[in-house]
Image (cartoon, rainbow, N blue to C red):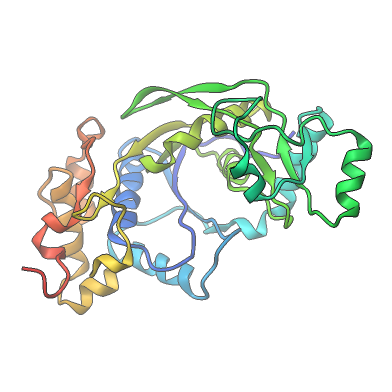
Amino acid sequence: MVPTSPPTGAGRYAPSPSGELHLGNLRTAILAWLFARTTGRAFLLRIDDLDRVRPGAAERQLDDLAAIGIDWDGPVVRQSERLPFYDAAIAELTAAGRTYECFCTRREIQKAASAPHGPMGAYPGTCRHLSDAQRAARRAEGRPAAVRLRADVDDFAIADLLHGRYLGAVDDLVLRRGDGIPAYNLAVVVDDAAQGVDQVVRGDDLLPSTPRQAYLAGLLGLAAPAYAHVPLVLNQEGKRLAKRDGAVSLSDQRALGNTPEDVVAAIADSLGYTARTTAELREVFDATRVPKKPWILESIGLFRPEGCP
């Protein structure tokens, strides 16, 4: 069994330290904090640093979160310090006959015309039934092996506070990549359970992957948390916010003369509230009133890049 601590009830925010948090990230962080604090939960911070890491980014992210009034309980957890727990989860699934080695390259998967196992667009199951000799031959070719879950369902349903019942595809997802790094879908399940996280508030771009995570949690004997996938912040073209959209980070806004309170006020306004601090927002926040449509950032004059009319 994967080691877990007794559930205490907690929400969390888990950024990847690949760069500065943009205003969409900050809005989601505020919402995660509000959901936790207004339901009597602890609020935890975790750095998801198994993939791209930019030196100093995590520290800047924590500074920005503190600057907009977000506080957290306990030490900040870093996934890079938890590798033995992911290994234990994979070992548990392997012992139960629920994993297999996959030697496919990304290009080979993309070129597959159809998926004989699982929904259209899922992993086609190429390596699912390889013989011992076939696996040995691929290793002899120098192909690195990822570890995949041997799923026995094609889809799985979760309940989401904003989206209701959501039925999503489940395929033979990667548990450990070919380079030996644990996959996000595994790590997040193991970490949430170990930290007693029973409420996950995050961007709705992650909704499609959530049924996979909930299904995986069940296989590991872990309870899936309650989910709330909130709308993203988009640019005026309806695309996900990015650095090229202008003054999208807290440091950018400070350079334009806007304070962290100004940023919080604009985020509060996008949620339908008048507040200048997260403490004020906490006093009036109602989770049932969270907007279900994305916030189009450039429609808020405060955050228009310099030179825009």
